[in-house]
Image (cartoon, rainbow, N blue to C red):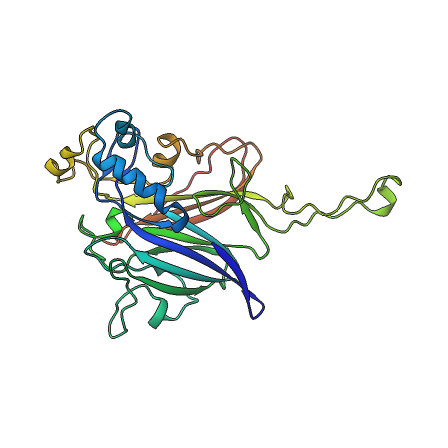
Length: 320
């Protein structure tokens, strides 16, 4: 990721690769052998290594790759500040497909950055082993899903059913975000600690101890302003087969044995994958929960965003 300034406004550049990689959904090995995901270029080598070990490994510890979700094999969640411009450089490494990144928002030129081939517009899809640049302007705070518009089939043949989707979250101006576990700067991820510029002020002069310097405003870790952000995708009807230890079984068992809704960030990457549990919210912590439904063949996709302070309970959400 590169951040630079252009005419007084920040431009945030993401190098993204569309990859085909098996997606393991839980600790029992339920998986989509033909999964597809967007990944940052910084994670490409590690995910390709996982893919090769999953597909071709037959001995211990190779089986672990088939019974435990990989923390980087997940929907891509990008972040930017309001009023920034995002430059997406997408490279396609999925054979036999043209793919794109279609942002469900405004702030881009449809003819060049739509990530689709619609009506009489020139295609902005990316062919295999080719690359294309999209430009998005972040004019509004909020959560904005993106997905592949190269194949909108809702069946198991479509790319969206196999995981080629993600989200852009536009944070407040001047905000920074860090890893909830390490506290280090975060490139992407389902969970983040977001620190807007705080409102804490120094004590009035009359209340200050003379020999101590006034305490400056706390930034970026102002407890009154910072919050923990969670993103949960409801992946509807993925192409799932039961867990097994032999890679040949995927070829013998091409028809999915189970379809349903997968919590493609909570179930796979918290309880099963060893990631940060979305239900493990500390007492009195301000948090923001973003939930998105993903399916191109159904009319019940939904997105809910809420922010509240917790008291040892998970915030209940209802979808209609």
